[in-house]
Length: 246
Image: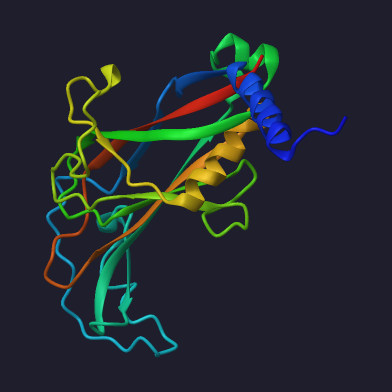
């Protein structure tokens, strides 16, 4: 006897329901949170960026020798192509390796394996911001453990942290849950990209293989502005959802 197509469809739907009924979900915040720190220079340094015109197409270095290296901290003097003036630049690139196999993942994840992973949020907070200049938006990438920087083919932009005025806390949308590790500092959520979420989910699903986060921004101080100085430290904690077929 042949089954009516509708009956076949209902049978298939019932089978999917049976599978879904055996799917268990576990929300997991990375533990510990990822820590990123940068020192821009001695805060007692009151030197200013020299107001010197330059030609960005010139073969010679017109800016690099204007100040002693000891005064520059993490900055380098170079010719800004837009203003055609010498500027102090700090190319900030901070990497944090992640090995989820060394974290305390939910036991069923380890026991039964991962079916799917979704990204619930990536929370962050500024623990210390003593930097005397504005920090431009910070791009957060996820990449393979062997990647040297965010230009590696494996690297994907996960999201961008909003700019930080001197001494400020995070200004992205507030995370209502907060984080006990923030020691009372405001906690915000990183606005996420679709491609970045997919890439991070793939790395998390293969949790036995280490990967890394890379934070990148470029701080620029122009002529007449103070040289960048002070410390910046911030923490990032992704929360993911594991789906496990038991």
